[in-house]
Image 1 (spheres, rainbow, N blue to C red):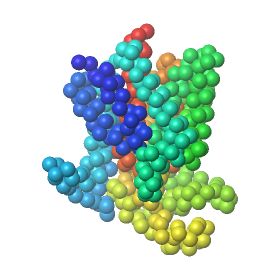
Image 2: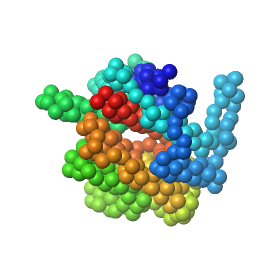
Image 3: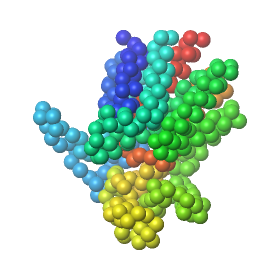
Image 4: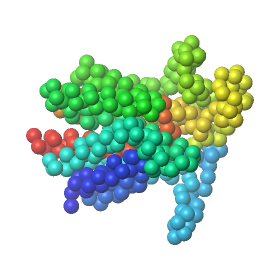
Length: 412
């Protein structure tokens, strides 16, 4: 049995898992990874960029040894239904392994014309659910989560996660429509992008709006640099990661004059970044260890100047709410210079190992760039860097794109 059709069949779960908050993508990635190992038999040894990625993941896992957030490897009993993986390092390693297996399996597989349409179909359905959720968020939240405020908050977060992930896969749909070259295709792509921005704004999801901006910026770069665009794009992402403490500090200084007009959520994020950057200097080479930022519990009451600019009830909240919502800074804070350089090298090598944009079909050329741009934007404003649901969804999306590329190439 071929891996490609099985993978496409499993993707039929994508819209359901997305609308439920994307948390189900991690187990789905596990299933696709194991299936790839059995059916596709990925190539060994891995490519150079995978070696750097493996080195980064290995270093991050090792850093849990000196992390103040170290926990037991596993807890509970599988037969009693309370089994859980306590060590974040194990979750990070398993997510990385299954992602590599899934992507490697896609690189050795193809899809038929019908199963290729499945991929576009499930992504289009996810987009429709994103728009419906935004348009009717009140009734939808009451229907799915009832009237309990805590449950409603979880529902709002699930809508946000779904919108963020759709912003990451939006380039696949937008590029496919735009690549048609006719008026209908261009109007369809433009309309899809505008609807996504509209849905994000309706739910106050600025991260998704930034992701769309990142996608459009990457589209423009590839349009201007059809030969070396990927090298510049991934090189810029890697350079930003390598110099994140400096660049973020400069960005905060540039935004200082706008403090009075920024919403509290933006100002609090900047202050969180300042706290994290100060802590980076305490362990610049090895970092504080995996998940260490979760243990930094200083509240706004400890920073009176900041608390004075926020509502009174914010004083009891931690300045760093579990993680800084900036993955480059979190990599620096928890894995130090070593981890940041390994990750930057991996990203750089990807840019140099990809084919030249001009060698790819337009729908693939722009989809790769758009996904990179959108992911980079979310990389800087949302999620913990160890969020397995986000990375699982991204790995599945990359596998989709690889299969679309290989299948279209075979059809030619």
